[in-house]
Image (tube, rainbow, N blue to C red; front, side):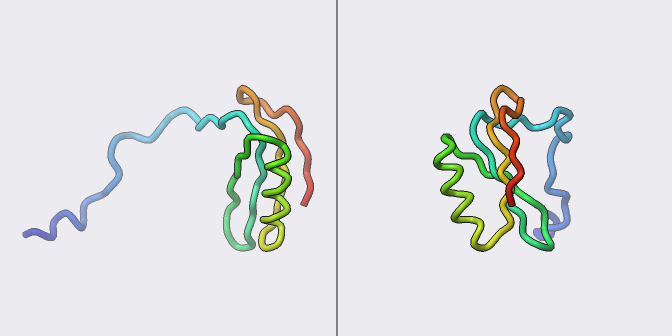
Amino acid sequence: MFNLYIFQDLTMGRPPTRPARLKNGFYIELKVPGSSSILIRRDTKEQMMMAAEEYSRSKTVIIRGEMFNDKWIAENSKG
């Protein structure tokens, strides 16, 4: 009787109807073969470039550019 909670669905409420908003900053996209990609945000361009260099040793890095008020300011595609 105490194991009834194991089989319940753990999602609560309804799913969001609006897309998620990204914060202002500089973004890089990381990809690993066989899985999906993630976005990493940094405050300055120098921090973004250092993170891109560090992650490029083990992952595929795509520099997305700067996001400001839900718009991309600079879009670059470097791998």
